[in-house]
Amino acid sequence: MKPKILHILRGNERGGSSSVIFNLVKKLDDIGYHVTLLFLKKTQLCEKAVSIGIIVKVIDKNDGIDLKLPWRLSAFLKEEKFDLIHTHSIGSNFYGRIAKLLVGKIPLVTTVHGDTLKNLKAAFKSNLVSYLIHYIDFRMAILSEKILVVSNLLGENLIAKGFSRNKVIVIHNGIDLEAFEKKGTRGYLKELKREFRIRKDEKIVGSVGRLIALKNYELFLKAAKDIVEFNKNVKFLIIGDGKQEKKLKKMAFDLKLNNKIIFAGWRTDLTYLYHLMNLFVLSSKSEGLPITILEAMASRKPVVATDVGGISEAVQHGKSGLLVPSDDHIALSSALKCLLNDPNRCQFMGEEGRRIVEQKFTIEKMAAETADVYSGLIS
Image (cartoon, rainbow, N blue to C red):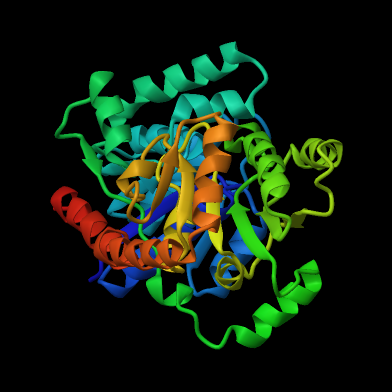
């Protein structure tokens, strides 16, 4: 009989984090686990998961702190006889860990996808609230048998805070390589160029991510301003939505970039959009190991990124891309100018990036390493 695993998500995860969890769940099912994905809230993500064949349950958490939820969750765990719980966020950690206490002997694994405190500060206006939630999550981590982290840096940070090296395990994010092969995309790329009014002689510098302060798109726009003064045949494609959309559009207008910046909103055709780009940029202030960088590298695109979080574990400076200091738009624009001037180097970096992903960041590798953790906990 296949071991039964329950993955718990809040339901409002976006972009990279949700896609990697979905791919992981599918791959774990392929290699011998019966995986159910439990959402605390019903959202469009539930429909997406169902559409790709994932077993989905929704527990309908009440707004705010739902004090009855741990008991409902523990009853569900007992009824379905799960062998292991795997949580992926502050909210799912909180309720999953309390439910574990109520159920008794059931192992719990937690994945840390990024710098928790920085993410909380980006989500809440009050630093006091952010620190309190972070403190509670930190103290309750004792209830997780294993804590998986997506980068070596995140792992070392947790160990420095007092976690045992035996408890913290680095498992890098992985992607489905086949999805980012350039297969039959020429006609669709022509349609995209028509949609975004991109001329044949224009190069595209692209970025993908939520439009929030942590992603630091202000830096991206400042660099774009420098570049258009140097090269008129460049456009900048920003794919994503978020709280800062109006602010960033106003900034682009104030910088007189409104005819150079394409705000594409959130898209479901990312595998094509990467192939539209000549360069991929990530300007974040903080990251774990961003899926978008791995996707760009899998699409054979050179990457220019701020040297934060675990980015340097994927992007090898000078080989698969260029790394620049955080919040330095001059350094960012200089790196972009360097590559825009050197198509041969871009091609070399793109091929090197693809090779790195093939070796280190596949969903198959991620699933196998996760399964090893499970097998060590399920007796």
